[in-house]
Image 1: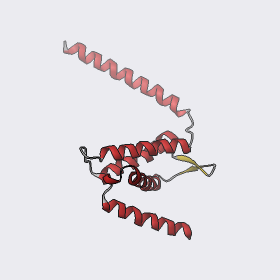
Image 2: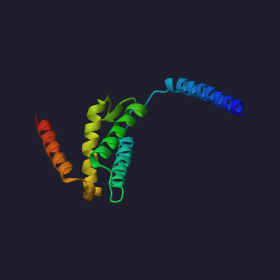
Image 3: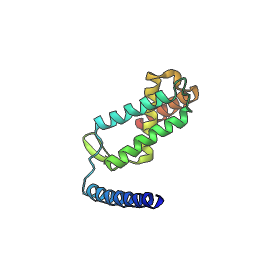
Image 4: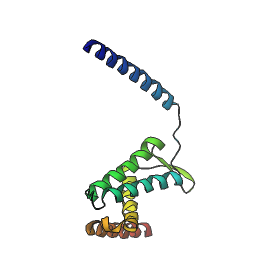
Length: 141
C-alpha cells in the first residue's frame, strides 16, 4: 500500500514541476503592465479592510504588526504583478519598494483613522501626524 502512495506522490510532484515550468515559461513572455489608479485603489481598499478587520475588538491583533503586513503586501503586489511599476502623472515609473511600503503605511493609517478610528493606537496616530508634517515640509522645499 505504501508503495502505491509514494508512486502517486512522485507522479504528482513530477506533474506539478512540469506544470509550474510551463507556467513560468508563459509568464516570462508576458509584459507586466504598470499599476494604474484603479489597481492602487483596489490594493489600498483591501489593505484598509484587512487592517480594520484584524485590529477590531475580538481579534485585537497588534496594530503595528498588522499595518506592516498590509503595507508589505501592498508593495509586494505592485512588485510581483506590475513589475514594480506604477503610472503616476500619466507616466510609467519604477518605484522603490521601501518607499512604496512607507507611503502605503501612511495612507493606510490615514484611511484607518477615517474608517476605524477606535482601532488606531494613539502612538500610531501621533507618529502619522509627525510624518505627514515632515513630508509636507519636504514637498515645500
